[in-house]
Length: 332
Image (tube, rainbow, N blue to C red; front, side, top):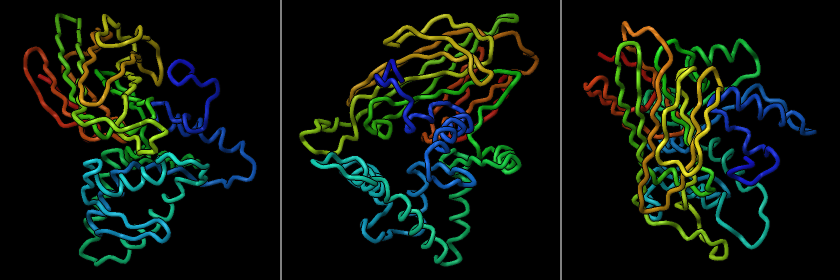
């Protein structure tokens, strides 16, 4: 926070920096509960814009009193669903006055969607259930509960955004956009992992490519326009098996940092990328000693991201997967 956001305090909005959702919500709850007069909820549900988009695809456009109409139709102003643009315009468009409760639309919107879903024809209910199940699998919908037994149930269903312990190869890529705009929605990513096994030594080269083909927004506050596609300032972390040794990082604008967190070794780097450009960052490292009788690899998806193409080259043999949910692979 100090280094990249120039902030000397941990603001509540930044309390979700841990790649593990429960750890983030533990931090959030600690400070939330110190605020006088706040209600004490049973838990916390986190969603991204993908969930309302998928619900609206099933139930169709809806109106929300005092806020306007919302749909999943494409909005040419952002080449994104209209509901996404409308929410950003309500919450983030600059004004010449202080506006409180700019995100208050979320409650009425979700209430209206739920009411329309419950009142929809019965033949749509299976589709709505599939939307919910897919959102959980793909980590567009996460749960955190204060009651331990309920939390364990959420974790058993992989609905709690936990970082999973493993005794074999593992990779979780975590991108945090510290630029303030909503540039992530304009970026496509591809990951290539090259894995070489020589005796008992496993060397990995992980390359992440970023491409933003869209024109940048006018982010000058005086212009009063919606700043969606701005400069991407990416604080990137790779979570890999604990004990891994970093060999090199290419593409970072700062010196890489190696640390340990969540029973993983963490490689940290940072780079910036402007609209209508592309970038690439490459990590090379070796794994700690492990059982190589059967080569297993767990890929854990970052919550809130779209599916990302992963190409894994294992001793010259290529495997391609679309990482839309956590996946465990056996490589030969």
